[in-house]
Image (cartoon, rainbow, N blue to C red):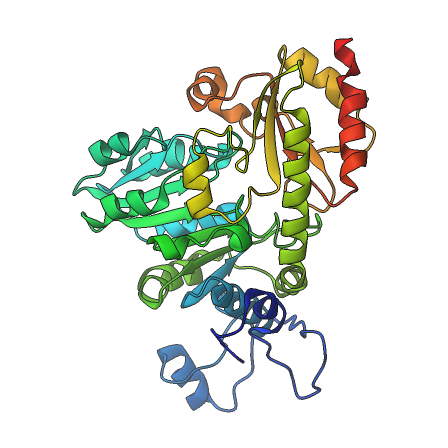
Length: 395
């Protein structure tokens, strides 16, 4: 296996972490095995004691999964990666592996629905306090982070409002108290934003989104330095079991090979669509991180290489108008996934963020007229034509 930091990202996405078998196959092999055979009982004992490197059980580690982990860690210029069964397993494990009763987590309020549930409903059951802040307000971060704070968590860009959090300054505030900073980098992807460069301790991904990018497989990842991985995460993951399957890891490896090509092209499409709809009289607001109209445009230029594959629009009216638009679409799929090669449209208020409740959505800035569009690889003129046709409901 290789770990060449001198390679450019396009090369790492294809070549890093290769571990060919004795057959020297071109494509990465899939090791579909639950367990492993030892040459002797002495070797088995040495492996379990940690005196000898090697695989023990595929819940602990697997050659195919390790190839995916090594490749993703290399892309982020990080020490280690632990692949998980889903993106939410990654979020939960990154928090719970280090928290105990009496600890405090400070998080931005703008969160994916399931992340919101973990932080506000599940963690408090274990005696862990969660404080939510306006993620764009550094004064609120500073007021909330104190010596009880064990972890800081946020998404940037956020789902679905595309708020941008000042990664470097939030990390600086957290480090004053030794708190670990965890970022959900799923919207930006490892292609467009590099959180470790700004001081983040842990990066989590839903591989289900852009990394697979073709709607085939669930998976997640937790990327960190050696100390966090070995002392906190690895023991937790070994005994709680939310590990990625070898087959899913193989799919993710194939997805990584084309990740940059897809994300760049989808981001270019998203920018064209955002520009096209900026002045549409039936759209109250178009939110896209590469638009100069975005209130955090200068911060975006510092942190991101492009605006990403997701744009959000608020249309005139509410749920009824959104549903009418969706029912007129012929090309774009209605689904709650994102980062797919196919364009996907979502109504957050009734799907991904329904669990926040009406008051919670109001606090998060998610009105009933909000639409989240995950832009695919179709011809951009065809995507626009489909939306234009659906918007005829206003005539």
